[in-house]
Image (tube, rainbow, N blue to C red):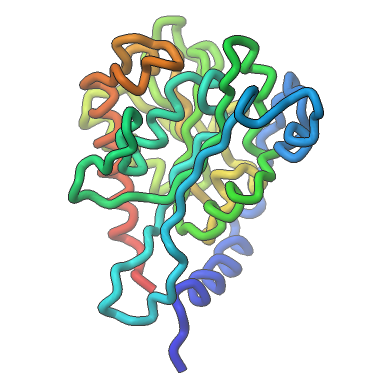
Amino acid sequence: MNTSRRTVLGLLATAAVAGPLATLPATPAAAADIYTSNTDLYSDPNLAEGVDYARRYRRHPLLDNSDATATPLPRTAIIAPHGGGIEGGTSELCLAIAGYHPANLAATPPAGPTYDYWMFEGIRSSGNSELHVTASHCDDVPALSVAAGALNVVTLHGCTPGTAGLPSNAQAVAVGGRNAAFRAALISAYTAAGISAFDATGIPAIAGTSTDNIVNRTLLGMGAQLELTTPLRAAMFGTNTRSQRKNTTNTLFWDFVAATRTAITQIEATQPIL
C-alpha cells in the first residue's frame, strides 16, 4: 500500500511533539495586547478587513507525493504575524524569503524555490500597534493550516534593541524558536553575510519557545523565530514607509533574504524526503 507524504509527516509530527522539547516553558504573552487572539480581533465590529487590517497567504496545491518522480512539496513556510504597519519591514521580508518580490510578487530568483507564506498586516495610517496579537495567541485558520502543513516555519518579527538587550542603535537579528539546528544554520548564514545574529532562547520575551507559538505549530513541533531590531529593519529600505518599503529594498535586505534562504536549504537537506 502506498502511503502519502502527508500521512507519513503527520505520524512524524506526533512523535516529535511528544519528545523532550515539549517540556520547555512557554514564553509569556505580550501584556499590552488589546486582543486575546486573531479571532477576538476579527470579531471586533469596529474593525474592518481591508480598512484596518489585511491577510495575505499562498499555499502550494496539496498533492499526494507518493510518486517518486513528482516535485516535492515545500517543507518550509514563512509567516509574518505582525506585518504592514505593526512591525515594519516584516511583510516585505516574508514575501521575499518565500521567493516573491515584494513590489510585484514576481518569483525571485526565477529558478529558486517558492515557499508557502501567511501574513497579517496592519494597514491603518496610524495606530497599527493596537492590532498586535502575540504569536502564541495566533489562531487564524489559514495561518495554522500553513504552519501545520510544513516541517519548518520561519517567522518574521520586529523588536527594539532594548528588548534584545542591545544598545539603542544595534542592527541585529535575534534567532529563537524550538529548532536548535535551524537556529544554528540561520545564525551561521547571517554571520557569513556580515549581519549580526545571536541565539535568543535565553531572552524570554523573544525566545519563541512556547509550544503555542505559531512558529512551533509545525509537523515537527518546532521552528525558527527571527526578531529583527528596529535599526536593522530601517536600514533595509531606501524609504522606510509602509507604501514605499516594497519599492526601495536595498542590498542589505537582499543579503538577509539570501542568507535566510541558504539556511532553509541547509536544514531541508538534513531532512528526509518522505
